[in-house]
Image 1 (tube, rainbow, N blue to C red):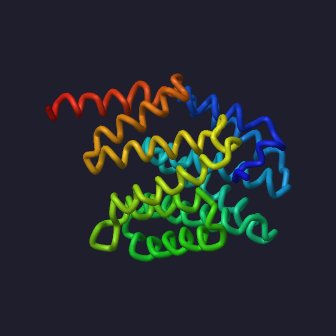
Image 2 (cartoon, rainbow, N blue to C red):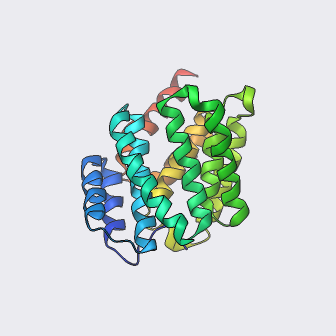
Length: 234
């Protein structure tokens, strides 16, 4: 079962289309529309948190941190409501891990305090539900971004992400029109590049493009960047 209420709304397909096309302005419009509806049903809220999480991550990558911080406040309010309801505690823990990571990106000085919190919630997510792929994604994030001096390791991050890949692929319903799946595979490809496993990265990006050739981020940016690296290293 995915961490989205895709059976309850039509948003999953629309979010997926905006993701592969790189139309993040339209993504934001969807999250804003969902928020305005003031629906407090837990599955709906969890879906909304997922889309807010995705947009926040993109905004941080684009250095739109003020916008990301505003949306993070909204997402944390929704997550707090989910936590109080007792709905899917493993997923709540995984998002808490991610949100601590976002806060660190806003202010690196907070890393010594918030880094361990992020790691603890990621661990809690997989301890609560060992089949929750999203918990392993967060373990991968914490290991990838944590400095080696404090236990970070890109190779360990890849191990967690590959575990997440296996778990999500166990359910065909999880991989169909799911932006989270494409995001996970894209991250795996990037981590492989970071550890100089260029052929592994190529295989991952080609897997993505075979499944979704319209995915502009991989097609127009990540994959060509990798091919240039391979060419220049010869």
